[in-house]
Length: 333
Image (cartoon, rainbow, N blue to C red; front, side, top):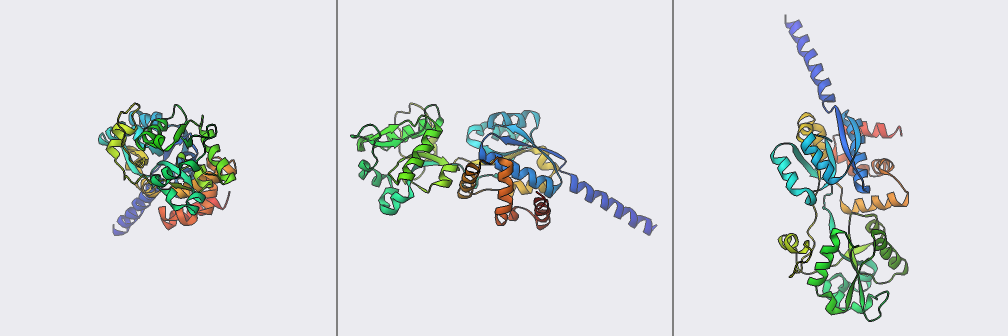
């Protein structure tokens, strides 16, 4: 009887182990339509598939449609890079109703916005790292069309950041120092203006954000407004078109989270634990995005580059056993 009982325990134990190894099952991952999200989605797909035995599949996604579908339909299972500010109320409601779970930060530093100048300017003149230094040296930043004005490169028309950069331009009283707010026309125009200035080593002052390929290629310094960050005023005024009395504040970081369905988090706790640990620093993501642009790489190719070239960064996210499985799979591609 004891022998039979022991055999039963061993058999039950074996079934439990097999179930645990396969508990992830089929998992769908939102493949958002911007480069950093594509990279993270492909990294998650590869690690979940080869490290945790999931049947991982990428599905097209975007912030609002993906978040809404996760709440209403329970799919996809994972949104690897969800910019939470644009989905805040629905996200909080989904978590409260136990439909969604926030695993962690996909971008450890959050999305970063600000007014920037090239590093080479600050190296020569350290006071240009502050807004007072910028104002005192306004004539350095030559306007492309009006020699009597200084140039501040804002956000393209129609973008949300056109509102915030315009309100901060007003709050900082940059016009009083001779600056004119210039519309770059497009995201490509804004990036091109930075690239052109860098190639010529000329002064440049304007809005930009991270993580981006541009800040991976070109070393820039975020200008300090000497104001600290007033998140409430930013939300209540700076981000509102037509705000009558904008006050100076630095941009608050934008939370960028990895979000899963509650069902996935419950059925695959080990895979969920990986997602909770997996986070990229902005400097690192800037470099990866620059590599993607230079090599015309999609998310799949960038995933292979990251996992092979940044082993010391991703292995702490997983156990040694999982890391060994992932590295074995990598050796075959």
